[in-house]
Length: 116
Image 1: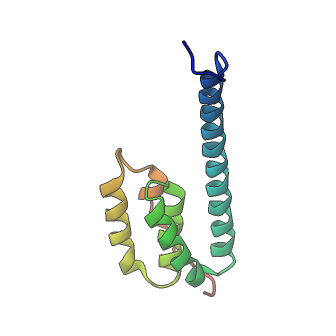
Image 2: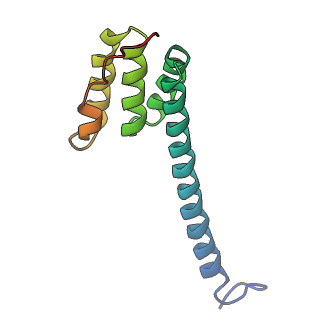
């Protein structure tokens, strides 16, 4: 017999609502990270690679499996004249990545030809 004051199916509805909220939260997290990747791309292209290194380092530590963030960190490091830091970032990424890194993450960033 259900506890007094409970409604049949109420727990099931709460569980469904919880799963729906979790799915919505995951979708919003993904959209936020995608927006951040786009923002960092714009900042790096605008020459703010020095400023982006610190922020991207923190993001990569928090989200080590995000190919886009790792690629952007490697690009920012290269454009900031810190190519020697790139292999350590890549090794850390490759060690944590459950599968072969994507071709985009394996490709070194192009050398910058314009002013820094």
